[in-house]
Image (cartoon, rainbow, N blue to C red; front, side):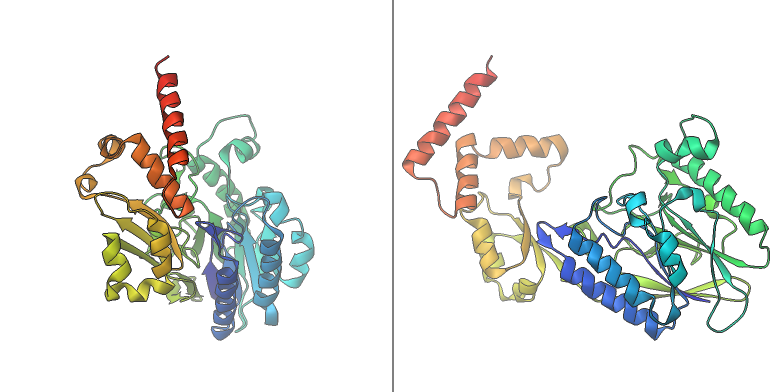
Length: 387
């Protein structure tokens, strides 16, 4: 049995205001091509199909096209709802789509109903269990049978116990779990939405004992947690600068006759790369070493003593796809936390900061009448704070 594991497409997401839809379409084209090239029996999409519960129409259209592409030639598709998705909306056509080998499962109550996929090469089917994201406050009482407050670990174990009951009725079949959750030991990035405050969202690796392969979604970096058996595929594109060093990929999983998985991590190589540049603005705009960054999404960290006027406009002329600008003067480089914020506030007067912001937004410094309005506004604000 050969599987392709992907997750966290976040269709409809933007990057600092720039649409990613074309790059997401290219990523899906690449995933579909890999599915054909490797003659996979099933494509597993482990949640966060969309970036929000009510996605834009263009994202829904792209997902529909993706299902058609991936299921060509009889390849099974098994997708689940993640914490960004509306469980009801993404799975509304699941009963109809299942007749065509496509499963989009959002109903936790059906997690113990496997998708049985027969390998192209022959042999017994593999039981693939789609376990959507479990919100403890929502599904906990139903799974426990009483109104109790449960942690992610507890609701996950309750749901998986139901799945194991079905597995025990099919002892000869290999089993795969598709789940969307935060497994303890996983490496995070800034672009994941927190499932809860503190560490009570963590689920132990031991909760997934008994499955031959566990295809996880939620964390954006490709990683494995129990050898190749329990793994995250990561996102097909980078969704924040914290993912700058990620190699975006999918996992091609080969399940042996005894259920032992062997995995090939295949880079996708699509999407505009990310690049962080640090230095004075004259160096960033003039140094030929940065020429390669002209096609990248750039985060510029300026180290000039004062924020240069029209900084963003000047940087955009050199780096058309610049996404983020930060100002970190030398005296602030080694400061952190509250001390750093204090230094930033004290580094320049309120009028200087307001004037610099105005110039950055309008492409020119404020005129004298505009500067006078800024002074009056700041004076009024200061007087208001005295009461």
